[in-house]
Length: 296
Ligand SMILES: [Zn+2]
Image (cartoon, rainbow, N blue to C red):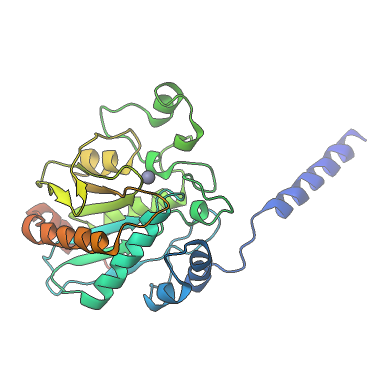
């Protein structure tokens, strides 16, 4: 009797679990482009499709395709920039502006630098009915990296200093999320010289790293170095991997910068990459040893 009742309960629980699994029929680039076009007034489905994103090789918690686009350099020792938008799903402008820059580079790629773009790292957060900073597991992806040596445990820090605010929940363990695992893997195999991550709404330019001098400004955004949080990408990439991270904090999450300012920020960024960013001898050696990967 007892056993069969437990068995029945287990069967019901299993059925409920199945019923409650999120079902996304479309895990393709086209599916994400259609959803992004519906969600963001500044990005159209057509514009997204026209960018020709690669066959997806990474997926979010809910199985959505990660949009990925590489622009190859002509020379193998050219600077490499890993460019990410939308790690926080409620920062709409960070995704929309990254799309505008993708359009620009698609039309004018010089071949002097190598760019790897992921314009929407947290598609589940953005594409919820009410968009969220966190991913589908309610984890702040920008707190889910392994804290650098000498920095506190991210979960402990969240429970005390961050006062358990849900928006900053780092997850139970570092790299628990497929989205952060993806960024971890990209850093290992792409060996970027700099990572650019677009956020909103603080209206500043932040920079973690001392191997290269940051620009004083990007268009209307002035440099203000705020320091890093344990578990953030800036903390991991700079303090553990010695890869500088530029954080572009747009002034508003829901309002686009003026087209003139979008162009100025891009031009200032490219000028800075051109003048300051050079791969180190160690990075070039690491790249030459890299086995062929899924990178296009
Ligand atoms: Zn953010």
